[in-house]
Image (cartoon, rainbow, N blue to C red; front, side, top):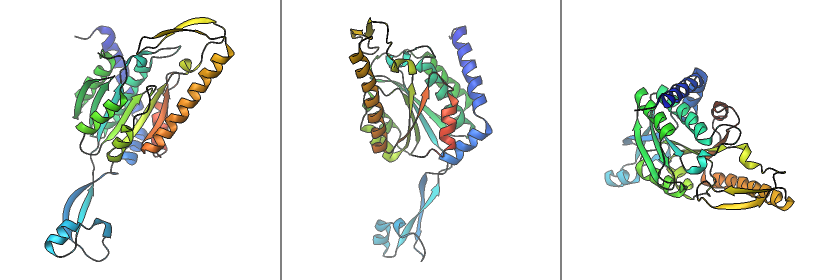
Length: 290
């Protein structure tokens, strides 16, 4: 049984997501992703003018005459939404919590897939695979996914992105569109590149502007790591601390950019202080360029 508050959140989330999934955005989603994949259909004999790269050399050797593979467009997509539910996602500054933003983003993506008659699945992960919902179609299925993102109580507190991405690669054999929703503060796994070789991968980085700013006039304060629980006392009024804090974020952003470029995935940021839907709309409107 769900509490009235959770039911209210689900209804509000459905309402906001439904408004966001306009004909324009749905059309951009279809033109950007649908039909880009190709799958094997049949083998036929080669005729002059056919693409040489499509020659099936095994069949050619067996039959003694050149044959080519005939491919057809995949009209149906499978979308997998990977949602980080580690403790850092519960962080909330002056704006919404990262987890709430991730839930709304997941809802919009799921409704986009549902509207286009695509299958959509969900992976919730921390330092372990918390929950896996195989891809299916249907409005009821989308509602259940939204409920899971909003209400799931993670067993783990940490983040293991490498384990998560390798799990997705194992369970999803056919090519899929994979959105990974996380703050990506726990390091950068080479598994993203492995996943992007077989799938269309988009890393959606959820950012909170407040956590990127250390208060300058607070003096000595105690801070805690949400995932490890480690507590330290820092002097936020110290110039060296301020400089090192800013340097860490600059280095982290640069490393994140290099990781994405090397992996072959794509990315866009969503801020807890801004409109959740606009970054996705801008991403689709730009043709989801690398």
